[in-house]
Structures are given as structure tokens and as C-alpha cells.
Length: 275
Image (tube, rainbow, N blue to C red; front, side, top):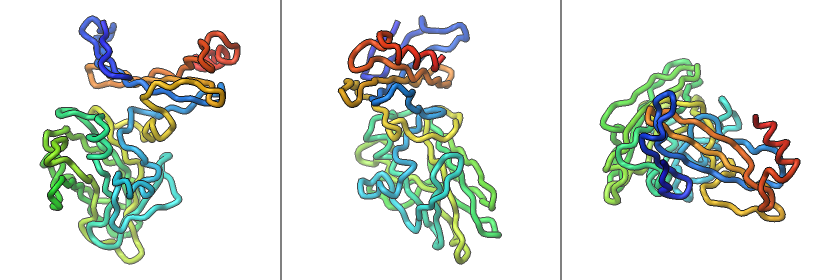
């Protein structure tokens, strides 16, 4: 038995338990229009709740990110854009969790999330970075969920994953969370930097491979209507279970220019390729 709660989300009761004992908790449904029968790309791993991770410096004016001695690079690591910080201490790229998570309504108090990023340095001497968070009306840096998160970096890429819980302080209008950032606690050596790639925040306590947010790949939670130039309507879903696991269903074609997908040979061929 399922009850529609909001567009793109469903909740279920105990009768939805599968043979493996898991209960489906909810679904997030995404749609996309294309002008081709080619199956569109969907993100790998769980949903990245952070937008614009491939171009954060282009989204400082709209306050999704802020930077202090942080710079773009042309490099990538595991498919993720690399950026760097240095030379002074406290250099950083700040991620505005209030914009990404709270204002968009993708989290609620008590949600278990995990933040992942890859980091390294190019200097010979290891360097320490510390994760800090800032809140509305208070410029002082605080520890995430009251716990210290310090890491020593070398020339080898290091995967860092930190679970945390959404608190009332994070979502309250009076104290809303602002920026989350790894910061250097000492300055870099001359001409050297700390490098980062693959910022991702997702539901659960297990880090999955980096991917851009589905929105950044052209997917939308809005119900879309095919047009003459964007004839193919696609759908995929994240399915959340009671044991914390998440599955991706799709993508599948729903229609072509408003006709049922099964009615065309082209879409039938596309569906066969999906099997």
C-alpha cells in the first residue's frame, strides 16, 4: 500500500516488505526530455544533494559557494573537477548547506547524511586540514555535530567520509547553517597547494561513488511534457529502504511526443537495450 505524499516521493507501510525483509520508505522520481531515443545519463551511486559540484566557482554570486584563496583547475579525479587552496591558513571553498540542503527542502531534522571529498597536497611536508561549519549570525567556525574532524594530507589522494545528522540548529531560520568547508590550519609552502575533488553529500551512512547531482545532468523532479523539439520523456527513481540502502530504477522511456513509449519501434529498441 503506497500513499503519494509529494510529487516524486512515495512512502510505504510494512506490507511493502520484500523477500529480503527490507521496507520501501520512499522514492525520488526524476524526469528528463531529450530529442533522441538514446538513453540519457543518470548519476552513479546515491543522489548527490550538492548542486554545481563541477562548477562551484560559477555559483558564488548566488551564494551556493564561497571561496577564500581557492582556485579552479583543469584537472579531474575520478570524474570530478579538482580545485585547490593555499597559501594562507584557513583557505577554503565553502559549501552553503543552507542553500543546497535546507532551502531546497531535501533534508529534515534527524536525517542521517554522509559528506565525502577526496584531498591531497603537492608539498613534501604533510599538511593538516580541519572541517568547520558556520551558522547564520555567527562568523565563528564550529565543529560539525560537535566533533573534531582533522586529517593529515600527503601527495596521495585520500578519501574522506564523515557521517553527520541534520540538527534543529541547521534548519532553524534563526540559526540556519551557512558554510561547510575543509580549511588549512597552516599555510602551504611557497607555490604549493591542497587539492580537493568530488564533494558529495548523500542520505545514509555509506559513501557511494561520486556523481553530479541529477539536476546538473538535466533531470528534474517536475513532471515534464514532451514538445516537438524535446520529444522523448524519460524517468528514473531513487528507491530508499528501511535498512538504509538505496537503489536506482531506470532510466526508462515514458513517451515520445506524448504517445505511449510501447507504440514506437524506436523506443521498443531502446527498452531492449536497457534490459
